[in-house]
Length: 183
Image 1 (tube, rainbow, N blue to C red):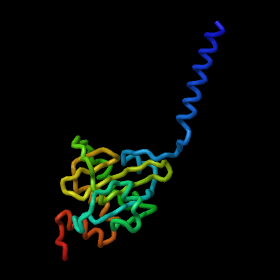
Image 2: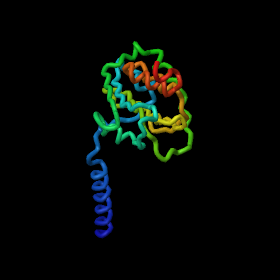
Image 3: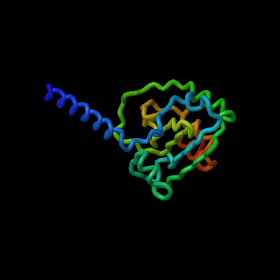
């Protein structure tokens, strides 16, 4: 009977130790992905962070992922970063309404490597939830929305265009075939 209690006690102690160690180092305020409508539900302002490399295929580059893009800022690969605090939900209500109602349909292509050219994330600073979009530099690349691979859709370029400076907008529109390069 005493041996049985020791085994049960050791098992309970083991479970407590494993639980304790598995929660070590976790930040309770870690960001979570959110459906966009929940991101803006109770807040008037969001933070938008954009990492941008020209989507045009020249000069030739080697593929880089999101982490490398973020870590390459400010000088490598021609990466630019724009941080817009206090993006007004009311001021961009039409755009945010469209984004909230965009149906995300996963494709299952599984791109081996994505040459990230535009990465943007809307973040609710109160809830730490975020909505992120990753866009590659090839017209055949998928787009990733909250880590879900979907088919390319120009709508995700249109979401970020109002927040980019004119020279970056020009490059995006040339890439999409909406403008000539030298106009």
